[in-house]
Image 1 (tube, rainbow, N blue to C red):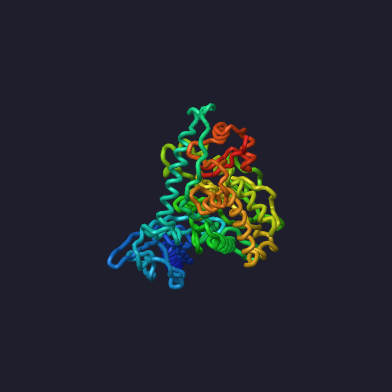
Image 2: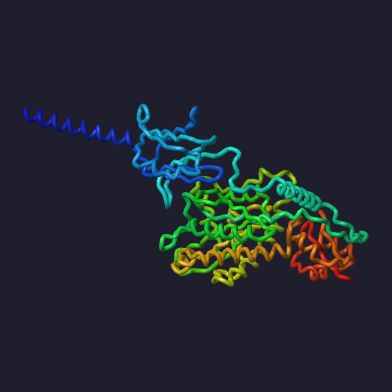
Length: 487
């Protein structure tokens, strides 16, 4: 009798253990927190999960809803705390799905195109489900470029493409005995603004580097980017486009795509450095390197910045599929060279200005393979305003006065360059041409011109032509006005 009692107790214990184990397996995952970021063209909702789980996402109409079903999952957070303002979500409801699992219903106030993906744990987060609500037809920037401005830039791009096509290898150069070209009077300009794309690094679920006192890179660089945009917009002849103006994430490829869509003349990405040691400090300026990083530090920084796209759940490859066949053949050989020369030239002037208000970590423009700089047709710089990992510099980076000083220094460097080399059809080009006294010895560069051909046509040595126009290389721009020295 006693043996039977013991056996019964053992059976009950085993049964209870089995039931508990089964219950644990049924509730294999839980939603520990939910995070929402609202951007002008999309909203991103992130579920932080205790374990990986399967998700099914689908839309319903009348009324518009997005349903998110999570298998074997329970809710361990309060969705009512989500900041729904400025997003497509009106309210969030949760409940147990028929047959088990968690159902989350998003009530919507606008049309969306949903997509979702899961992410495995990294240094900052555990398992995640990311649900993006993209808004069809919306621009990622708050004030997209005017259609007339876009038309002017499209005309310039077409002229540059035609010039590049004429300069393809194997084509005949202009004959050296060509007759002198009559000096052309400068034509009126549409007086367009010079567009500066200002990119605040990181954002949303990607905080960037974090300082010893908890300062997040994404917050500091957004403040500096906003101040820089205000400097740009406050200067006649310039207009700023912010790639992000809030706490949300934008992929590295999308940042340069936005700059291209807005016909930007220049792209500047703002970051705050970090290192494993708290001692390094100072500002740095980086341009794209065609042959890899120029130092181990530059390579380390490039790798760390490029990895940020993995946090956002997208890869970092560069595609030129939006370019026509002619550009694909000449971009790397011609356009990239001119673009990189402009980047280095502007970078030197920005570095000089930064050196007046802050210590410089490097006294020359560094070059590295930052993904965010890989836009072949737009000159670009990545500026590390300081080391957030240095306690003293972290404190200064939080200071609004220091932030304003950094933004002014960056813009001063940009403005100095564009005042010397204003893009064709810009207000600055028009002002420059109208301030000059007609001297009869000027020539406006046309599509297909080369510096050597211009020198031959006017009967002056190339070196003398360079000296008269303060040119360091052979790069010239359509619409640029050259002073022709008397022979």
